[in-house]
Length: 83
View 1 (cartoon, helix red, strand yellow):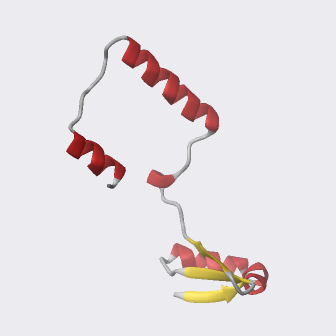
View 2: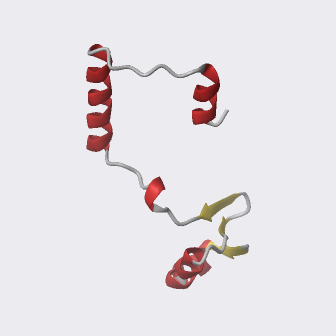
View 3: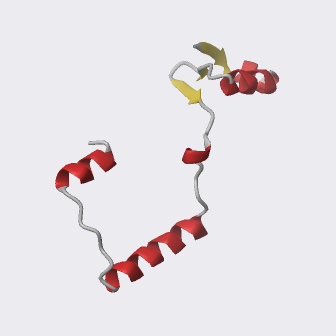
């Protein structure tokens, strides 16, 4: 794990992003009380756009209205939610 200042990160951004790509943990310290962890985002974690998200919600609502529901147990719900 590497802890650096925000100034150091700005000055050497490429270097630290390359380290992150190699699975190194980088913490950026900002002032006395603030710090940030930077990590790479893999294909599974990519965020969908707001439009894609809304489209998925609309599709799910339509499927529910058509009775195309798949019930799952409370245990499976907790597992999916990481509880």
